[in-house]
Amino acid sequence: MDLDVFVTAHRAEWDRLEQLLRRARHLTGDEADELVSLYQRTATHLSLIQSTAPDPMLTGRLTQLVARARATVTGTRRAGWRDATRFLTHGFPAAVYLSRRWWIPTALLSTLLAVVIGWWISAHPEVQASIGAPAELRAMTRPGGQYETYYSSHPAASFAAQVWTNNAQAAAMCLVLGAFLGLPVLWILFQNMLNVGVGIGLMSSAGRLDTFLGLILPHGLLELTAVFVAAGTGLKLGWTVIDPGPRTRREALAVQGRAALGMAIGLALVLFVSGVIEGFVTPSGLPTWARITIGVVAEAAFLAYVYVLGGRAAREGETGDVAAADRSASLPTAA
Image 1 (tube, helix red, strand yellow):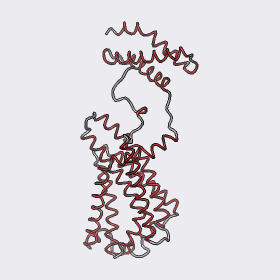
Image 2 (tube, helix red, strand yellow):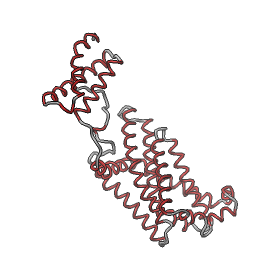
Image 3 (cartoon, one colour):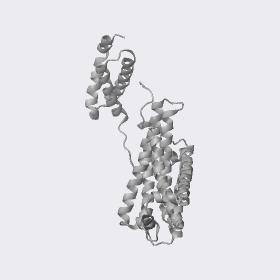
Image 4 (cartoon, one colour):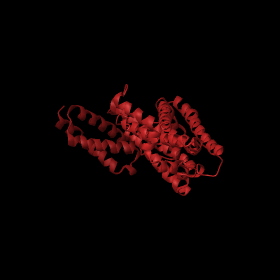
């Protein structure tokens, strides 16, 4: 294709499109139809130039024209309460449901790791000695010690906010860092399970494992589930780098990355609930059975939300990705 001849033949159309775009709010009916027609032809021209005679300056001008025309023709879509409601009732639970083959094994293996670490510490006094001096360990595990006062050491509201922030950051890191083949996710998981395992081991060696479980279960069931979901999603994202499946690697990562972003928002809400429980229920004067019951009910509600709403949405085709209108085209297209 002779680029100079092509430009000479179509420059008037591009100039006319630009003129119409400058006064897009005041177009007559005929001018609106003309704008749509020029937008379609200019998109075709852009595709031809990109494929046969790419010129950076011309391509840049036409790309800008096509983008402005597309925004004018299709309108700018704004998120509203309907989008938020759909995300909470369809997108987020479906994404969690569809990633269950990743986060359920992650949860089981991580819990097993915490139990093994706890048993190892409890059964080996020399390991306990490496953690701290006897006086320090007694201060941590005795009645009224650090493990018990930790949850009531600050005002409930500020403690809940601090816990929520820390946990949301950990979940977000699992989701974002999953792209690095999932290796950072494994480290974050190990650190979390190590902390739980140390608590199990030390309190068990002091004969106070029931007290420890009574403190961690009310909020820990929902909190750890959220962390496991984030970690499983991060590992899934890391595996996508290795095996993107039938899509191109770029497209597969885009799909998983958008779902992970939505997951981060949804899990922040879940962790807010667990933070409220940790700030107000865990250190409360309620009986242990009542505090644990609240934790079990919160966990059961979340699982029902995922498997009932999420399962139904997934069967209807929901994937947790953004709406089709908000996605970039997988391949260059021209009208």
